[in-house]
Length: 210
Ligand code: SF4
Image (cartoon, rainbow, N blue to C red; front, side, top):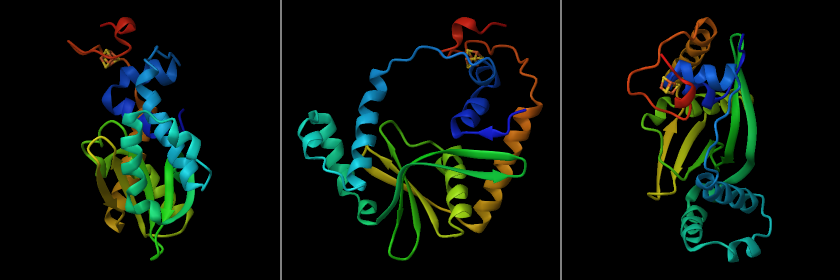
């Protein structure tokens, strides 16, 4: 029985239970191109040092043109002027019989006492960001841990240099709880015996058959 879930686990199950089976039940990892993640990792690390007020002059001077351009935008966002509560922060929340958790890029607090969860996206912002598992888990975790209803989630789209904000409401809190508990229950009763979908591809393609 699974009782600990990350946003990625839930996203994987929603996309394809078979993929979830390979990845989280059989623990099979497929090779990925690390270079794709390198750019994002550097920007995330730099943002974390900056918010912790560490000296980043040397790192800044070694950035590539692309990194410099992205970093200049990120550094200028209004959220970085708020108080830094934590960066690269592990947080979880218990709902019913399950724990849901993950790592926030940054948690800030503005002068009105509102908590802002920041998530830097080098790729694209999720299509349905309001009900993305990351949004649901992180907003509830911050709301319960800090005992506050003043929580917002800001996706920072580094590619298009825009921001997308979701404000937690009472209605969303109930809906998030329900959705998270439902999918956790679904995973625990799933028998993972669906056939491969026709013309379906992912990194597990070579071991996925009808
Ligand atoms: S190839 Fe398709 S059916 Fe098989 S694991 Fe990947 S997404 Fe799922």
